[in-house]
Image (cartoon, protein in one colour):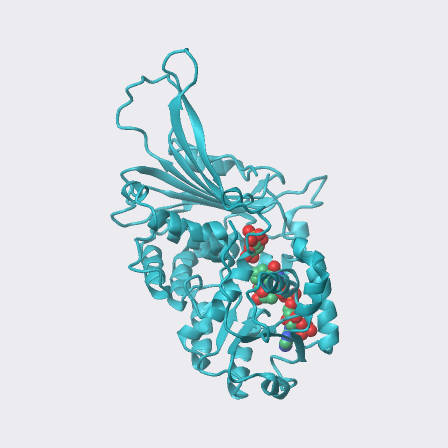
Length: 486
Ligand SMILES: NC(=O)C1=CN([C@@H]2O[C@H](COP(=O)(O)OP(=O)(O)OC[C@H]3O[C@@H](n4cnc5c(N)ncnc54)[C@H](OP(=O)(O)O)[C@@H]3O)[C@@H](O)[C@H]2O)C=CC1
Ligand SMILES: O=C1O[C@H](COP(=O)(O)O)[C@@H](O)[C@H](O)[C@H]1O
């Protein structure tokens, strides 16, 4: 099946931080892939902006290298690369000074969508918003895309919201959470709300518990300075895992519309119970060799760091649908495999007619985010053969790439999809200001709690499943984590 490409309106997209790491690895190669897919109109323009004093030619050379390195198999289409590069421009600009703003104003066209991607350090978000306004570059229909982290606690998120609100209305602000752009994450909504099968079972009567795992094999090397002030709770749970939880737990929105969806997610965040200290396990990866070589502390260049590179928590939702069904969340760096999964673990049948020892296991709906995006529903059947009525578990398996006749590399990357949504003016997959604040309001006391107690993270070995104590979080409830594997 060939994915349907819906062309977007003509646009001028300014990428502030256009020479940075995120632009190089994700944004610019992603835009090239959308160009190749035929989604970018003939006369659309992408304007890189940063302080480096390069010109259009220099920026095009930079982007060409980025496509070669990160564009995947699309990079082989050299003619298309050359055509794409013609759409690129560059302005040397200082977010905090006056350099470059008049030149940028002169470049912008009136009759096209104007979008400004803030792919710079968060400390510059306010300055960019202010200057876009001062120099008359942002029209009432312009959009700004704001990268993460959106604040580091409730207070800073409120301040940032207030700063942006001085110059832009909420409908112009696109707060990125790239997990919302992942194919499977959107499929979660399709599966839940476009099928009659699941809804009757989607509640505490039928679901024993939910596990959300985002396991990574990478460490924090290269990003230690940022990560050490953040940790897994701020870096992953407050945003990505929280969004996944919301999509699983929310009620059906009345329509697939930005505010209808975000209203429902917000209700879930408001219903989250505070997390008890006993329901949190924090970990930090050890070194691989003798001493601290390769350890988190070495990667973070902070020998005394107490920042967690792993966290597991048990979260309860206080509403009619979920009372009594815990959500277990875990995420960490340098784990056994890169594997992200949501597992919906169903309850036992009310009465087994086959007896206790006949191989029964609970049904599990496993939603794989990456790699190999897809879903598996485990069901019980009779073991084949004449050996009597023994049960065995088989997977009803759907790999999205296989089901859609694609090879996996054709599935658009999250950033590609989200940037096209910005141009279309669709905020459904972006976080609203009140949603981000509510997520911090839940997160802050958890962090304040372990800081006040002086808790140290538990050590775990690189390549493991995380600290031993995390196993206990489920064992003591008579449950077990699913294996982390690709
Ligand atoms: N990299 C990643 O994987 C991820 C990044 N993010 C977020 O994306 C944003 C960008 O991150 P990343 O690309 O890694 O950062 P980098 O440090 O790699 O790039 C920063 C960019 O901002 C430009 N810049 C710095 N100061 C100014 C200034 N005063 N005026 C104009 N431009 C400036 C830099 O160019 P120059 O120095 O020439 O001005 C460069 O292009 C951050 O908010 C980060 O948290 C989010 C998720 C993942
Ligand atoms: O936002 C972030 O996400 C990445 C993980 O993203 P993925 O798409 O590769 O799953 C994480 O490594 C990083 O620490 C965090 O800031």
